[in-house]
Length: 259
Image (cartoon, rainbow, N blue to C red; front, side, top):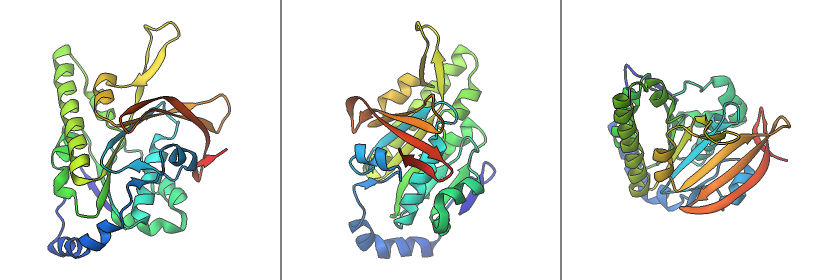
């Protein structure tokens, strides 16, 4: 696995890597499925096999609901299939221990995952704007965990917030366009906040209006009164509102499991 930080954001594949990709392009891409499974069986069943290639997915939820776990599981599954993954850890929540728990005996898949640690929202912007410099013909998954964390800590005056909202919207628009054109999955997680102007409050993603516009699929992860039980709610699937399709799961050391 390649670890990059904000002091060294640029990653350029060697000529050997690109030659290898070109040589494999015909055979490799012909075997790529239309979806990338999340390794969460109940969710994958509802999604007709997994996250659809060519689109953006937003997963949001409160702390501890399993957003990072779902992102890691999906990255591991993509890498297990021989695909390359770009993983932007804006939360700095990635740990070797958790990766090892989820990957198990398949920990060698880490060689196909490129991991970046932006320190500021400007770093994140630079990574997104240059994302195609990091793609190879085998890259089929780009993950940002979470897309709104560095945005949130940068908020300030009304003028500053306007600028940040515009920049976040540009990032999402570009990632959506790249996902469609390069036939990959852009999987983004988001923090939440409570809207207290509703009678009983309401949990929604940070920068809800911006995040709701671009993704073809929106998923919420929710706590329940019974630990380690969680609830997965599909609010939008492949561009269509679903009427909030739900499924219960368990979040364990091994990841999401059926109940």
